[in-house]
Length: 209
Image (cartoon, rainbow, N blue to C red):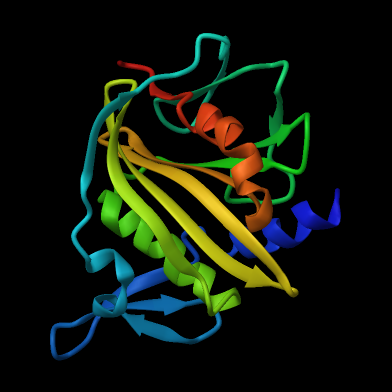
């Protein structure tokens, strides 16, 4: 695995459901991390108002290959000429890993059987990301309608081992479970691969749609 992918994966792997929630004796919600640290839910950046993008987003016509989850009812349509996929071996929390065939661009789908509020789903990812990249921040967030389903679009930036990384993801949840589809690369490469990033993300669908 390339160094760029490995470093980003190590950070991202820590940003997926790596803590529990608890309620203090004063009624405040806190997140408990595996390393023994904790943070108030109220400290999250997600508590700000998230706007809705009214423009509909749909999968590309050339995204013809369906990668179907075995955990919930979501699928990701990919262009097999641009992306290759495999069952995840590097992150036990992920179901599939995706590799862009034309450059340093990577993705993974993290699927769960439980339903989680979209804001909380992204909140968990950010708080865990900060445990390994303290300067991680949200640079873009909005609700979108993707292939007829309401998703939360989030873009994070953080630093690991001296390299600046960006993580662009769709967060989706319904009664059948929750899905995080996250694309990651060096921040400097995001403009170059923006079209490929959006193309993969917009392949996220619900099988009952």
